[in-house]
Length: 117
Image (tube, rainbow, N blue to C red; front, side, top):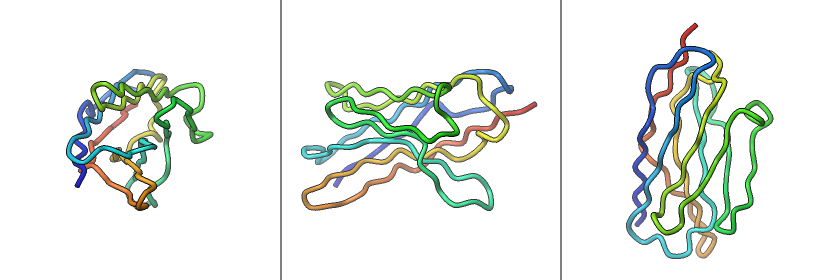
């Protein structure tokens, strides 16, 4: 089993910045991709950004140029640096980890990010 614990959410004004952290523990051997998803009220959960164990990254178009995902493999932690936040970034942000063999997704409990005007 893999445990993912997020931190760093909160309330911020539009244009501000936040950094989310996700610490992984447990049976983390074989975890290849880690990332962040978000879910706004009344909407489906959507991908925000992912990063592989080798450092390859992928971003949703809506956050490109504003968000940066990074990973500390030694600390088993993934970060999401969010700059130039917009009201539409308001959502619960979930950390995700993927192990390909056997294929399985793991989710954190989520952390609320609220961007005010």
